[in-house]
Image 1 (tube, helix red, strand yellow):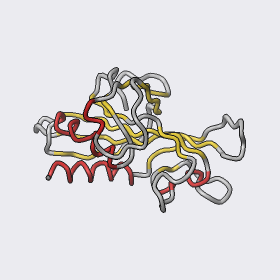
Image 2: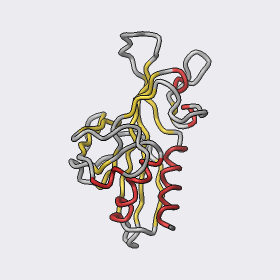
Image 3: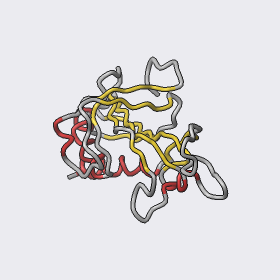
Image 4: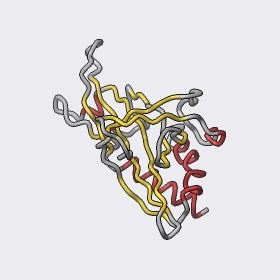
Length: 178
């Protein structure tokens, strides 16, 4: 995913943007923070007629609407917008199964995303196109750990199912059209 990444994880650092106050984020963004995600994490790609700077301008509102604060990564050669790592011990969205958004495999007869503690981040990479538009790659990547073991250090990798990634793209399209 990230250019120049040789290890198993990419680490992105961010400083909050002033426009991040918009939207309904779950928690405030710390002054500085980092996000780790697997370099081989699968993303979903979407093309837009808008230039990258317009995409970046709208992403804080899109992330905020979905309940995630976000900011531009400051240590990436690529244009990357990221959320701080979120922790979910219950449903990410009320009335919905976490397994609709994250695939962490199956535990004892139920999807681990619905039973385990989840830690995940949302990453959007913005690439300029020769046409003047942009392609975005949205990645939801994280890990699950069983709740019942207090000192459980074994985590299972999780990846996005495409649903949250698709919502990022749909909201971005809607905001670009308005």
